[in-house]
View 1 (tube, chains in turn yellow, orange):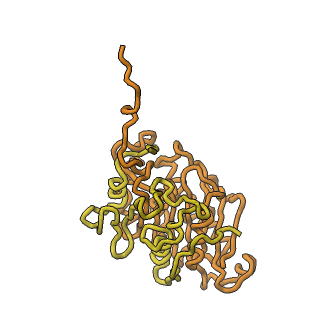
View 2 (cartoon, rainbow over the protein chains, first blue to last red):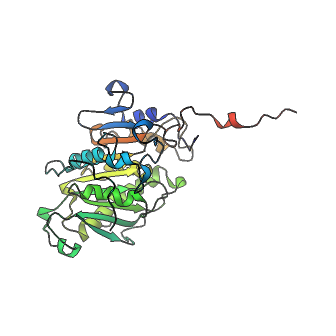
View 3 (cartoon, rainbow over the protein chains, first blue to last red):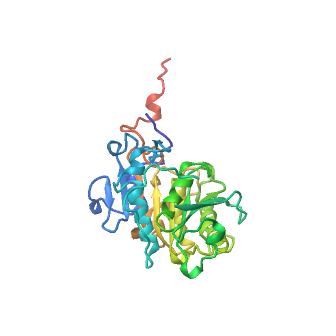
Length: 108
Length: 219
């Protein structure tokens, strides 16, 4: 069992306090993403090969969990960076990726 | 296809040590030198990722996450910042880190990127993302640059009771939503985190306090 540093409170309490989204704004206990994609998403063990600690992306596929690089789930890399790219580009808009990029090499 | 851009040591200021980035190769450029010819009017938005406590540019996040943004049309960068260790993680430090990375000055990381890569423009869009401490930097950075219009935090949280005992108090208040909502409103922020995060959460399914594991001595 890992107990880590823990700055106090459980994960959901900390997400609620940091993001300001109250529980009645959430779809489920773990999914508090809003219609516009803002909010928070808590990744469960069962959807990420049992990985749900601080380095939630770390696994054996190029350093990442298989789900982190291949899943279309809202908590993972593809959906999160698609949201960020669309949200931050505003008026000009940018492309989003139609599918996760998977475990391709990321350095030349 | 994306082009890699690196600066082994970034001299902009003390708090930013290095940059690793990727540039979309959407125009068939085969080198950064060729890409420099692109006019600012056709420029691409900028994405900056900040790593977690104690991590360097060799970390998997430093290369993969900016590359993901480059694949989406951004000039994507990871900025390595100085004083990233745990005891250098308080409110005054955050102010310096945030302003030196995202601030308006020509020697901020954003300023240096724009000066060296004129086809990268924060006015086209500025995305801030980070892991753990880096996520907090991304969250708080908008007070130094309102062009930031999207923030992605990975494994960053906060609880006002009990944490940050090594800081001077300001840290606890600025990381609460009430402390940063005036410049980082909810709609700009997305946070993802593991259910059993052991830094910004209690980690285990059933948290066992340290004292419960201590031996009991009976005289």
